[in-house]
Amino acid sequence: MTTQEPPHTTGQTALSRHVQRLLDRLRAFDDRHPWPWDATLTFLWTVAVLVDAAGGWRNTAQDPTLPTWFVTVLSLGLALPLYWRRRHPTVVLTVMACATLVSEASGASLQASYLQMLPVFHIALIRPPRALLWCLALLVPPLVTGALRFSREAWDQRVIPALWAYALVALLGIAVRARRDYTEGLVDRARRLEIERDQEVRLAAAAERTRIAREMHDIIGHNLSVITGLADGGRYAAARNPERAAQALDAIATTSREALGELRRLLGVLRDDEETAVRDPQPTLADLDALITGVRKAGLPVRFDLRDEPTAQPLAPGAQLTVYRVVQEALTNTLKYAGTGVRAAVVLTYTPEEVRVDVTDTGTATELPPRGQGQGLLGMRERAALYDGTLDCGPLPTGGWAVRLRLPREDSPS
Image (cartoon, rainbow, N blue to C red; front, side, top):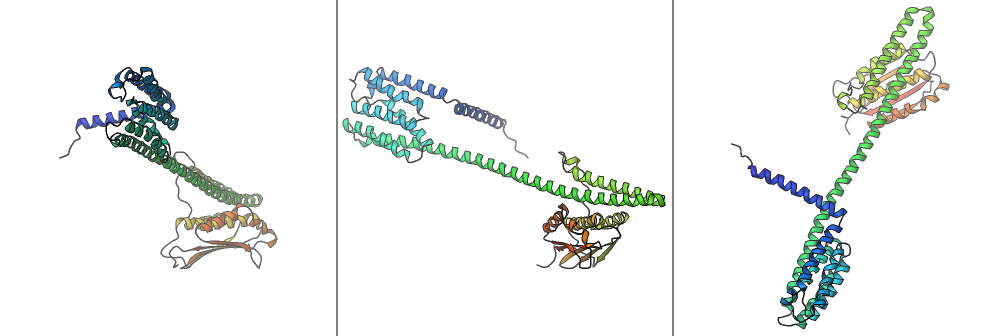
């Protein structure tokens, strides 16, 4: 059996939300335009004290024989300064305290002196706590003066209750200030968190752009090198062996389609709608055979040796991609710079501690330096460092060039 919420509860909740929205709008309007509320409050209290000055003040006065004009001036001195209570509360309290001191000393004992609570509230709301000591110094002399000059009752019976009233108003101002500061703190914290999230998003976007640029460099550089090699071979074979030229053109078409497919997959992640982005898997070690076959078709003889292939705990997909891209970049550089009649070798070795990849070629030493320049070498080093690996490149003593990649195994003992 389920318990349903009484109908009136929903109505009360909707009403409270409506009231809260109304109060928020009024508060926002008051922050932007404070003068209407200040003028209204000052006008109402001025009318009230003038009505009291017409004769009602004599009911509580110590000396009811004081002239009306005198009481009227004191009443205006207690009411009119209220208009500036939010902007200059300390000055307003000082003016009102002077009027109260005259009122108590003369025996008028105007009830309007309690309007001092309003500037006291605003001092507690916007001024440092030590400003309340200044309030105490302004409030006590009029109270003590009235109690000592007209001693119909014990002085503390007039001073202590009034000070308690002012203290409670000050505590109310402090409580409102604490709540306001807490709310503003939450808003500031939310704003800072939003700024931090924006910064994280920008950093992630920059990292993604770097990754995409590196992938595009690898894809375009390798495939264009393969296509160039196939085109050169097809041009030489066209006159002597048309069948070999046709095979070269077929290989160029296949390589171009593969390159376009990889670029579409890579650029698909840049679309606004992630649901429609193509999410084909990244190359792995299983794709090395196809990579080397494409390089062979481009005219570079490549020997591929796989040593100690593991039966368990394969490399992580990211590490496999790193190995693939390093082999791809190294063979691409050989196609570009090593010259004619060059042979290459790729050796992939597994040990319990690491995975080693050695790519070597037999190019001439005079053509090797350019291969260490550009973004390719930087990209290979970044990929290796991402998995705590190392990458070394350099000429061989017997001639040629070598690229050596070392990646630690994730399951290796530390």
